[in-house]
Length: 244
Ligand code: SF4
Ligand code: SF4
Ligand code: SF4
Image (cartoon, rainbow, N blue to C red):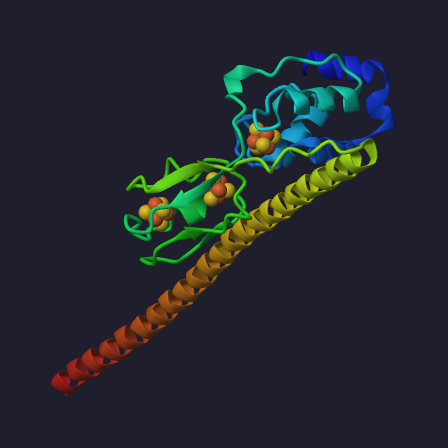
């Protein structure tokens, strides 16, 4: 259990904001890149680990120092410097596939946590850029190294005309970023559900095949016993005829 959580529990915070509500609040701060750099399989598992006191608040490079500070504020604990052992904070990037080199092996499709790829076996694959979170998880699996990460240039800085307009533009930008995080979160949840469903379907299919195989084997066994009995009857009637 980490030190922050002990302080947190000591302050009685955990008793005020419990269970999934706390996890939801932590998850809402995380950037939903789903990159696993925090050592957890996605933002939600990391949020759960923080809530359980099993992880520090400074393990998310995409969230940066700003994210770690926001978590400290939410939980009412001392801020921590971002732990660089988990990686560095990079500018927003998206994946781009070199269509001429791609062999359509679909390994990237399986690796993508938000199902941002389109394509199928032996067909060239491409990325839906709006859905890509820039998690890098497709890079190591590509056998022909045809995926590049392209930096997304930040939108033009908000021009300062007057306070009202500045804050209106800032609000628009933050709303847009929040929307993107929510979309990525939804796609990750759908991806996880689909993977789980496929696993279940495979196991149901396997079970059905085993049952069918057992039934066939027992039918074959009954058939063999019938044939053996018939053979015995034939040979005993042969013996009887010879005796007569
Ligand atoms: S963005 Fe990556 S490092 Fe940050 S919480 Fe999500 S999965 Fe973990
Ligand atoms: S396309 Fe690649 S970088 Fe983009 S979200 Fe999917 S796995 Fe991550
Ligand atoms: S892993 Fe690489 S080669 Fe295979 S489908 Fe994806 S981009 Fe194409």
